[in-house]
Amino acid sequence: MNIILLGPPGAGKGTQAQILQETLGVCKLSTGDMLREAVAKGSEIGKKAEKIMKEGKLVPDEVMVSMIADRIARPDCSKGFILDGFPRTLAQAVFLDETLPKLNKKIDKVIEIHVDDKALVERISNRFTCSKCGAGYNKKTRPTKAEGVCDNCGSAEFSCRADDKAETVAARLKAYNDLTAPLLPYYREKGILYSVDGMAEIGKVTGEIRKIVAGKT
Image (tube, rainbow, N blue to C red; front, top):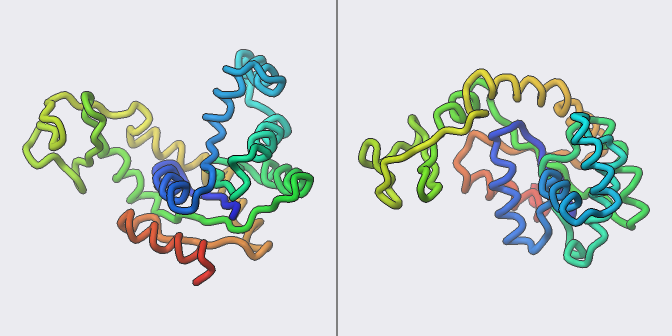
């Protein structure tokens, strides 16, 4: 089973991809992780990407897809893969569709984790993390049991991600809506697009995704 997870920053793609990886025994592929690995290994694709990034430019779609194709061809992806964070644009989706048949593979399902923009900004901008153990909290939906004290380790030191500020989240959502949202009609036309409510509890979202993967919707 080869799956693409779509959704804006903070929709829960990473969490659901991790769960799917564990339950289906497939590979979770993050383009960020793959880029870092390619650069660290000094592969031909890694060298190209490193040079481009050092120049402050975006890695071209053909280089990104070549890197993904190289990763997908490895034995550990034989049972399938989950793409988290790719494709980001319509051009990347087209490149991917042109490349996968050469590997005798195709995308089986595209799952959109749909969220309400306003609610998502509020959810993300209220997140904070224990600086010591990494436990995650939310000022409105999941505060610490004792104010200012981590439930997990008792630390009183917390931090917030710089890109979780409300204005930053709003900008990231706009970029998603401008660049990535056009992928929805593209995959809908192919008959492989499914949508789940990303504002629901994590367990419920997981349950809906499992039904889609099992062909029960």
